[in-house]
Length: 234
Ligand SMILES: C[S@@+](CC[C@H](N)C(=O)[O-])C[C@H]1O[C@@H](n2cnc3c(N)ncnc32)[C@H](O)[C@@H]1O
Image (cartoon, rainbow, N blue to C red):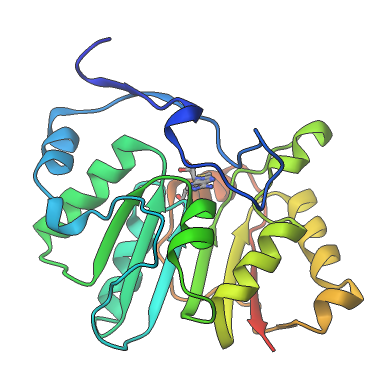
């Protein structure tokens, strides 16, 4: 394989229980990784956390911990981390070039309150995050999985909602943004179900202070509205 091409295979990722066996919310991608991304990955051991089957021991003091699931190239993670330097942010994605981008920006800007994981975030939530320990979770522009037969791969689905709920503190939030109206409708419908309204409240839906990612830029240029959801654990 070309030195600067990475290809994740599904078997490299830990198995999850919240999704049916063999189902993933992402598709492994064959991606070109630049020398600088690879350099950042090879030289950032202090910022990388590997998957393990035990609870995470970071941050070392009781400060708010937030997850950015599917951070892409990390522009939102950076903005959150800079806005809240006293909080900790765990950024998780399966896409190696994006991991390299985020790591090199963290070095450049000397940001120390972010750790990065290159693995399936669902397995991390199940195995490494203590129940009722997270202050918030961001899932910005999750893959929409447009075809009906792929809806089972969407990250916003009942089993994963229950998992998120169990890991958040009371009052903790799950913030979701999507530019696909049919996904927004399905998110709305799911959270409006009586069994879910007992567990979640809808917070302020206005767009919070966050970076404009390339997904949002594309949505705006193609005339699609972006919907922000902010759900709070009751
Ligand atoms: C459409 S992109 C959005 C990226 C970024 N949030 C943004 O707004 O630019 C969705 C990202 O989620 C990642 N992803 C999907 N499911 C994931 C999972 N279970 N664990 C980690 N990353 C995941 C994909 O690899 C991809 O980078």
